[in-house]
Image (cartoon, rainbow, N blue to C red; front, side, top):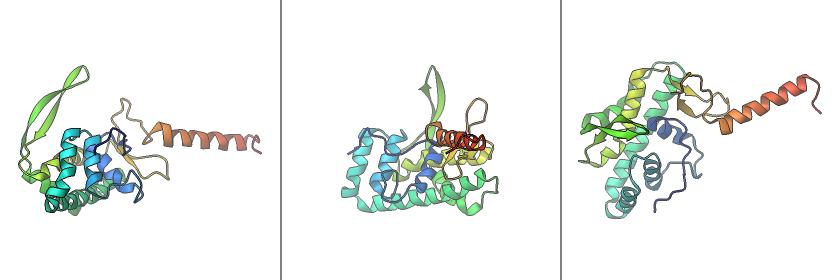
Length: 205
């Protein structure tokens, strides 16, 4: 059953980046996306689908297991391509054609329309996929990836913590974001830097 408890650390600021980041979670941990329930949980938490739709999709595993297996396989193939393509962008390397095949496969079959939806005090343009086939569930991720890749690498970065593999899309006002999250990697870096300065001043024990 869908839950209101966040399962994934959505720190990438773009749904494609967040989806790629799920590949970095340790297998068997809550943040890992390895099965149908994990995919549905991610789509709900990322606000691609509603809680009501999530419940219906979880039931689909029992009523139509072949569709579930096929869609999960495509989702994991999409994620593998995203890890390669977005990783290359973050390293400022060329994106290999093979890494975008799954993205293009989804874009080719996507049908839908643009729609203005509320965002804060204003409005934003959002693509609404037509639900003619199960793959529509992955449309938002594929379109997000296509936008990032076509824009280039300027705003896509890897966390400055050398031990953190997470990517993020920097849409901060000054474009100087360094960490996936200040509360975790950013603060740890500050503590480590403070301790290092203290030792240099002779204050360490």
